[in-house]
Image 1: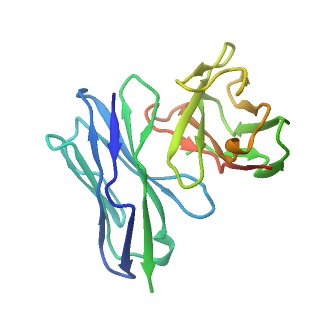
Image 2: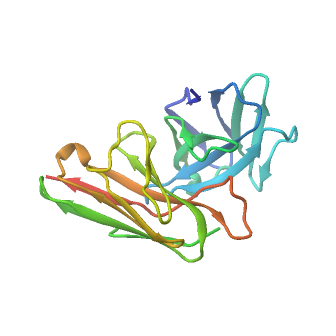
Image 3: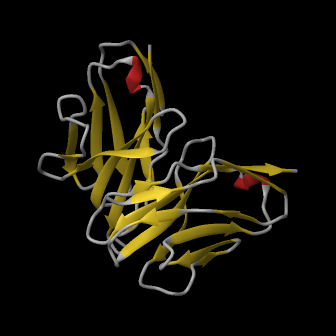
Length: 114
Length: 117
């Protein structure tokens, strides 16, 4: 069974600095997708970034980028120029191509210090 | 991304009662899902809501406790039946496969915070 592990329950960063959130996953599949979702106190799950496993190029979305290491089964999220609005729970998630079940990690709570 | 709404946004209920949560999407989608997020926990898939047929439940979730309907491609309901305090959670619907959009990405509604006394 696929599993997703986020080893950092909490992280904090100074405003305008850069922070990296870690995620590892376990799968025997070769075609899959990886996601980072953000959940602020409003509880809305917001898609931050997605990565197709067959693409070697790391995905980027403005200040958010990933470091995807397929062989190591690692998928970290880098947030540059951190802003107060980035404070939230961040969940890493896996989706096997052809299946529809998202498997989530346990989440990392990110605090931004002004 | 799709515009997804959920009703109610929150509720406080007495044990033994039932609550029906609605999920409405602004356009037709192929897939709709229901997740549960217990306090301080991650998300767990309850079931896939299938249009025109019975929902597909994940291990540990049963139809008698969480009946689901999906009468069309834009609407679904989840009922939490015979509630106990252990059912206190956030319930989220998600959608995937919006026409013209990728089928491999799920977008979430705002969630329903349920407290059972």
